[in-house]
Length: 157
Length: 220
Image (tube, rainbow over all chains, first blue to last red; front, side, top):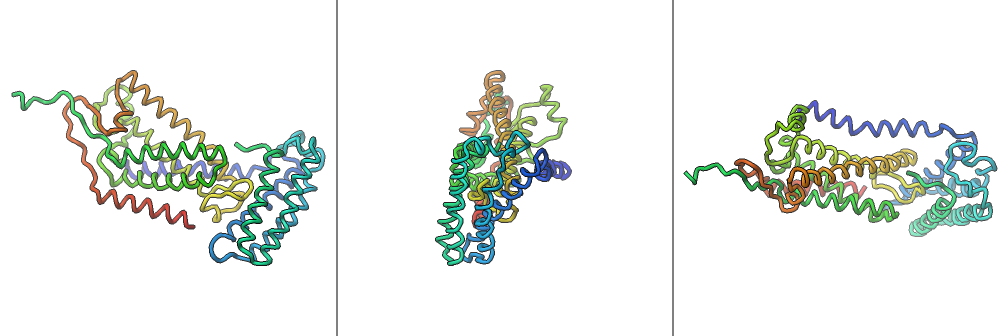
């Protein structure tokens, strides 16, 4: 193969990445304002989770970054209970929230409460600079995410 | 006279050991990655991905510095050769045919892309993540995970095509490609020299390079 061939070959390999970027930029399409805001809120929560994970790895955790993220998670864990008003389900626009959110309100509230019950433990461990405690609390929080997603969020892909 | 007669067929050692081991290890790792991905065993999924990263790196290196039949320069040919092959105007020779060469490139490129996307992928709960996900935002990591799923479907289609093609060659053209990838040898019409094999040193350098890259990614 000539150099030109290789350039074309490498170019072709990157095309999907550009498409991915374009798709990511358009993922607000088809959502109502409430759904857009909810999506945005959960992305912030995801960012905070990721910040905890990224900053607690290695030998020297970034405690300031961890405290900021743990605070975000703690506040969002309570706020999220207001992010699912009636009528913001799949009937009104594009969302992965399943109708069960509204048809099984007690279970849904319990699933959300699991997060808000566990979030303060993470914040406490971060404030105490207890790396092992952060790891344990983070795992528990991840379990709360998964627990709710399993029942109330449509799977991806 | 008998001594000088050109043999009508030659048994050629087409695939060397590193090429075969790399091939079957990649096949195994894709299977493991599929299963662990589908069943949420992401710890094992990561390990399988690391192994694939090393294997793909080694195979690309081997495509430049490996044995004769493993080198891209030797088997990747232009569209004209592919056309000749499709019209039956191609003399069988040791190594990939022009069409099979495209399949090798497609599969390797898809595997590289798939492993690359996996490195940056972030799970929806933000818990399980690829080793390089700390370099990108949650949103970008989620997009990588989405495309990790899409590319896997494309990869599956190409693997299915690969397997069907081998079956077709076996049944219609009576060519035992599966056996060749297992024991390394093929019988070809005509007289052929044995393809040149790369030295052990080249192999060691390739393993070290692939290992080093994988190790660097793992410890990020």
